[in-house]
Length: 470
Ligand SMILES: NC(=O)c1ccc[n+]([C@@H]2O[C@H](COP(=O)([O-])OP(=O)(O)OC[C@H]3O[C@@H](n4cnc5c(N)ncnc54)[C@H](OP(=O)(O)O)[C@@H]3O)[C@@H](O)[C@H]2O)c1
Image: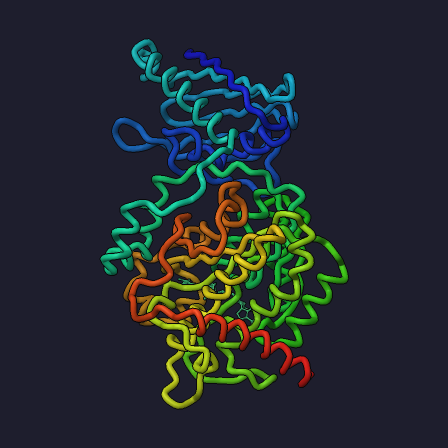
């Protein structure tokens, strides 16, 4: 048997250290040998929870099954580890000492036959890996990551256009992932609103934020689907603080009613994710007479966020995440064209113009709401395989299926902007794969200041107009 005993000290509460470490989905963030991990049991992390962790071997990789066999939150967790190569018992103790947390990690490995004979030869390497993992865990729990900035490689790719576009695929995600820092901030007690949580990126975002313990308000429009999503997420994650709010977000009366309900409830909002969206291939108007892309993709998030400003401000430090699209790189802000007309209608253009508008709004709000402690950022997910892409862009979906990101990969930067400590250090930026990126790949799409002012005035004015009409 090989025994490992390592200790680290971290200047964080015992509860937070325990919560992060006992959730073994986090292992790829701190153990350099692990590169994939998932929870395979339903419910909260606790007695009997199981995780599958894939680790590198000198040749290939190995799947480890971790089962929690003792769970005394927040002071001790024991995991039984099984694989074809070895069994292990990991026991991790968390003790409060002089305002810090001491983490003692004990692991006993036993190689299976016929590999047991190699134990002596493997011992030094195993102990070295253990030490390195504990250094990684300390770094993760210290949670003192540098503020986000664009890497020189990404900046160069954006300048060269095509390499920049190639990063929209799953390869961009894989490339980005290599540089990411651990995300160990605790979301307990934080209220987060996610729109469009019934499928695709919104659902993946809601699941991950629920796993991390946030209190969730999920905005959906279909009551049956909303009920199913809430109960599925509660079962999967064991997080009971999840509820749905119903609203068709392309209808301003429903947006206003939603905002009124949230304002009446008075719960400060730590994070608002404006994710709901759709690309309409046919021109159409809503029951309120608004062109539907404009209503759903720009006016709706503008109006909801503006209305919820008091609750965002009340949170002290809050974040707004606007989900835009790489498609907006093709369009220049043209305020007089935000509401598409039926003649020569092109759904992708109408969509891209509104997403461009929301990106400019993001930059403007970031400046004017800094004093209120509200950080506002936009992100685009690259190309992700979601029901929305499959139904709106079937040819694109068929052509690119093999290089599309999963919904979870597409949603990663939404979750990171909502959760990571360092993500609140910048505001008014557009992110892809946790990096602030340029808002223009082409110089011809750059708008001037008067056009930006016109946009903000137009949206303000629009609110007055529809309020009067109502
Ligand atoms: N997937 C990508 O590659 C990609 C790329 C760039 C940008 N985006 C953006 O990412 C966001 C999420 O898209 P997705 O790909 O995840 O698509 P999706 O699977 O179709 O999800 C869209 C979500 O928005 C909701 N929604 C649409 N219209 C709504 C309305 N009128 N009222 C309330 N909710 C409404 C949908 O609800 P229902 O289930 O009721 O329809 C669904 O929950 C969108 O803003 C999209 O523009 C996605």
